Length: 595
Image 1 (tube, rainbow, N blue to C red):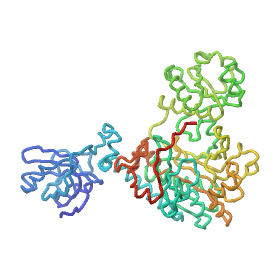
Image 2: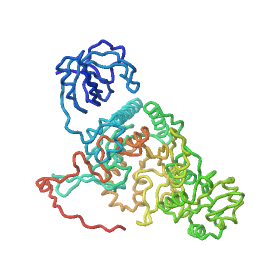
Image 3: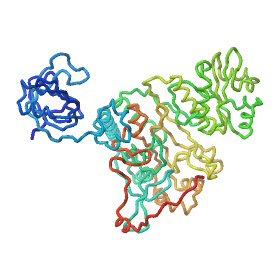
């Protein structure tokens, strides 16, 4: 058996005259006739042109060379020589070629269902690519993504090892706990009728590790959530999970900022700049989002008080119910944005709970079109408040505070895309801090956690935790880059008494809290240090660095949007014997009615 001596990306002009051996896949095959066959041999390191030349290659090697087809796996031994004519500048090996002297055909490929070409990928269709993922992953783009993912995890481990973090594994089979999404549950064969859950995150275990005195923890871990289908979510995803003891919020943000900035620079060659901090309230007020994209200048303004002076029923209804009216000035938008465009933006606003999108143009010193007659009485005040100039357009978000902000915030993003306001290649990030501790769920008529139930309130807000939970702020924080949340965390509750109070505010009785979280409460009772941490989404980091919106592009073996693995045909049926051992009887699921 021939054994390779270097990779297909190694040979250079300096190797001319040397005998080397390469192994890989036949990427292209070109029979030029007259005893001349060219192939490009590929591995994950690169590509080298191999020539089968009747004048220089043995007859038996020449014969085998003429039988090759794309994606055959071969090993070839030969002599490096300088190419005749112009070099191929697209290849690092483009100045040389390998004259075949010996060949071993290791495996011939069957008829290919797809080709591993980057330029054909969009035409193939994603389902076909996922079904034959082992071929799809041969594409140079996919190999580049896998390498980038590896570089990120290696850099992460090295960075945090240098800062005295311990990489510690936490269990995959745990007790079911409510964390917001559905658990994947696993039956126990030894305790009939009892169930494990697969972890949605290692949250509780990393807190317990702090109680155990581990001080600084790192884990690159799988998390599993049985969520409803969404294009940007996967049932299983990877998290860079971190926790630190004896820290305050600024301590965590300092080291995590250093990590994020250096990671983007060293691995992605991306300059993030500084990572400023912005309160949740400022983010919502100015950008209409708790994930603000700060790469462009469009900002929202609160005009609730001004709008209350009009006779516009839409504005009046929001004001009377304690809601809000937000306004966004789009410079030059009167000419750039047609009625058709603003109608499309209105549909976006409706998607986020608004009744519509009132719009007015400012031209010739007057408001025209749209809701001009309703806002005419406050023209001078609105012009001054928004800094309007001739040719501007104003859009309004109306509803509850969150609806007004969020609906107009989403329109803001759509306008920026339409007008190409985002500089290409720019990366800008920030920390969003001072999140609300709770959000009121109208359907359930109870408080729910804005982050999760283990997030500590700000020390300055402890006194209103129970008396005014709606205005209590938390020590939660999110890292947002280019409008995407790439990480989030908080300072945790380390007092069992405060943790019990939070559970109570979330509607859990003392008995329910002990039943679901008793092991955490017990740990907190035995000397818990102040602690906090962060979790970064590894998949999201890779997506942003390579510039894709498809999470399945950055995972080696992803699931479809419905949670299926097309390659290995999962999920599948279980063996009846296994079900019998587990005491499981299958039946049709009960029909559920949407509430």
